[in-house]
Length: 199
Image (cartoon, rainbow, N blue to C red; front, top):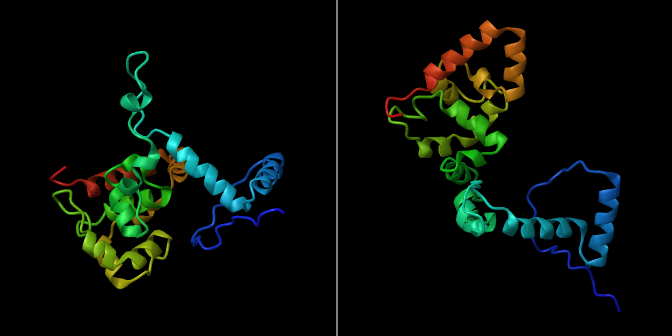
């Protein structure tokens, strides 16, 4: 008798991961999941978790021939989970700031915006984590483009060019191609506004 699927229905899934892939891969993945007595989402999770054991973070492509990969390149992603992730979004951001190459696109955008505020990003180069936490929802709304997120958020940034800080790299390239002088002017203003004496 076939065993019921171990679909881990008791595990809370808070986010949806949407991935575009080939029709063939989706079809074969469904077969693999069925043969493993798993739901497709559980099967994908299992494969990702196994991959976290394989991926080496802080990769350095140097070392003597024959040197064990972990000695040369760092540690598996599975070993540094607590260093780069927390369920709490604010705590997760500040963990990633210690490893800036692992900031997500959303986190990177927030950091660029926060740096414009001498209140949130102090002159000594430190962050006011408490104030950021207190105003997290309003700050996220501002990052999403709501200029009137809250009065206090406006006080954080004053007349700073927040829109430039929130632009994606693709938008910066588009602006550069359309008007190099305008891009340079706004970029210089951003760099000047984000300088701190302690940095």
